[in-house]
Length: 233
Image (cartoon, rainbow, N blue to C red):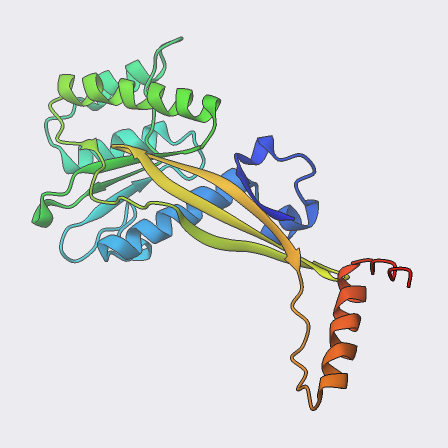
């Protein structure tokens, strides 16, 4: 028993029931959960502000919901930045071995001078490696195209958790939570925590010392604690 937190791929026997209950892959659930926590933090409704929609104050998000929305990303950049050469970026997007990478999400909020982007990866060696590769791509890409976007620092969660699944079997209860932190500017990393503990027995009012001894014996049996043999007289 206890609490273990690891990247999802590192947890052996990850409960299939939890995946079925979520109705989506863990990485998709993680990105959705973290994105909506971020939008709550900045106070912008993503329903009315995710490209091609735009909030009344001009705020607009790009969200890479499928991972292959490069043309949509280019359209977002061009809509918010008249200097963007759409034809050149479209050609670059088709280049073998190069192309254009999409951030998981980006905000263009001129009224608050907020032009940040974020990438979400598992908290693992491979997740860190892939996250760094994305960050290293964006710095020169935005500089060469004279774009204002920078790795996000305003949203800085540290060990935020959200319950994904609670499973009860017999005397044990297992809680599975998603936990995430910002590990670098622009990079949010998550892991999954699995905590198993004994279910708490119902409270029983003890009326006298004899009842107290009886209750103690029942709890020991319930917890599987063996009684020590009586000492010889």
